[in-house]
Image (cartoon, rainbow over all chains, first blue to last red; front, side):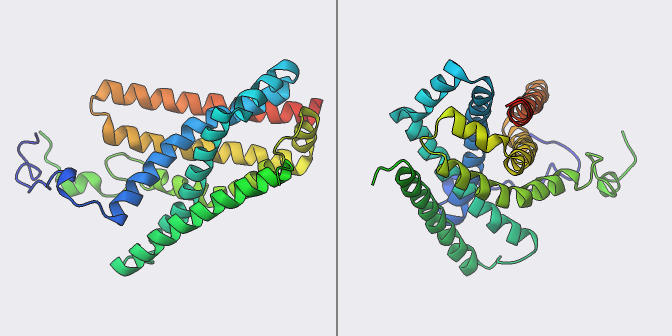
Length: 135
Length: 126
């Protein structure tokens, strides 16, 4: 609890749980969550690069884990996180130059981010499976 | 007790003495990562199911190797800047906060070095 000075008698904002979930706040926390998830995902990226440099059984082991159903599930999650963070990051960059702040535009660009990141995820996986000759 | 006003303390480079350096670096790496990430995803999708020889041939290509090094550098710089803000927001104990930030920054540099070394090893030594 802050005491004294100018910060002592400022009004406190209500707790987050009081607010109804809105697209603005939900996408904001999702940006942060996907960012943290992607930071964890960099461990797999570095593991894959190091395994390729090591070669032999190390690379085969990494490919087996990454290519397993659980590995693919994680990759799917990370691919959506990456596309979401990318699309919403571009939305943030527009805010940084002072564009798109009115509520109607914020909601519109928010839905655009959801649609674009979902579409990019689907396209990437369909393309990936067709590369492997699944279709 | 300081006789300086609150405003006086944050003027110029502010209380953290770094001005907008953190904010700017976060944006600069973000802008760099837009094309780098799109390139990387398209390459990895094209490599789906590829064997070691194909993956190594891709990494040994000078264009791929340079872009991979740039991608790794920008990614880990961007990630540690972002994680630092998350830690500063949610970790309240001062000692725990500083320790977490140090661990994240050291890990980011170590992982970036490992990734870049791996790419260069394949590029130079095959």
